[in-house]
Image (cartoon, rainbow, N blue to C red):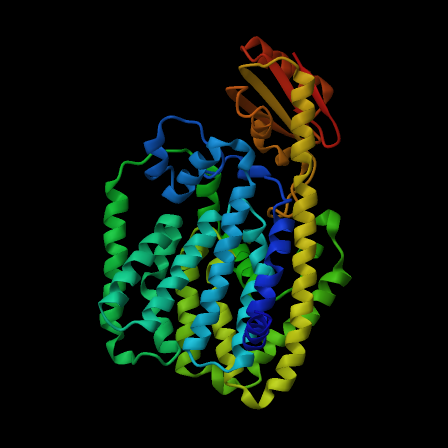
Length: 477
């Protein structure tokens, strides 16, 4: 047994280290509590008896997988968010293994395979996804998409087309944007030299056929309309598109700790520069140490696959979480570039060590901020329920916003309770049955205005008013 383990460790050191450390990583992730819209995601405990509307297109999304998990979580609400964290991390591990297998199928040397796998697993690009309990859709969309690529590479018969179709539908049903993977497998195959470009039109046509069938089904189904003006506004905002592009590039390729520059309270320009300068040389060297590699067909096709996969998010909304959608393909491209720099492996190894160490530091810092920022949701909700005393049917929640948030890593105190849903969770979703909320900026939150809002709420049938200040809570009945 010991010899077998030793043999596996020597043959696959990176995979061995990843799976050996997995329980510790999962234990750390499981400490992160829900914040902000985690409380209202389809995968949070759902007690609505109108099941069908959640399994059909709901608002702008169609995510039956999330809906199913929401009802599973409702069986025992205490399993939320731990079950979400477990499923999300398992998907990331599975994607890591598939990325590793693709590099082996591509014939990359051992160093390229190991560094490609490490890049995918450790990149700070994963933080917005695997630290969030709302990322089931993103991780599984990526998993099924990268599985479609892998099955395309290893099969060359009916199995290829059957699995390709199944995996793309699973990717799209996990998250609508997953349909972008439909034409990616043949493009990656050409990029890795596993298929001639002569037959690409036929393969692309098949992939487009999958997308068209999905679109016809999607548009034929009844949809529950939800007004989401802020989401539509973001989709039409040019500034949002530029911000999304910068986020995607920054988190995909560099291990810089952006919390130190974006979040005002955490701002530390020196630490940001250190993490950027330690991680950037590795990526820049992989890309530019041999300029000829950039002009090769393989590089062009792999970059094309990355852009196609990212395109829906770039057109709609590219957040830190959404940047994860192309990370597997980015890791494969890094592996390809390293594999084609055989004479420069020593310097690449040195630069990779700096990148990996920086990535680990950034990952830990992002985890710490995510964990710390989530803790208030528990003690605030429990404190408010205790102050409320007896159960109520209707509650009005006034939230005092004291700072700008940064993704899910740095969330203001008021947003940790998810517009009052955290209080419902604290009662096991037994009460209240209805919560309405109003968010005030710290400058508008005058005692007179709060009293006016509270009086109006009580007159309109709300049995109590919950007030969440930046550093305290109050209940008015």
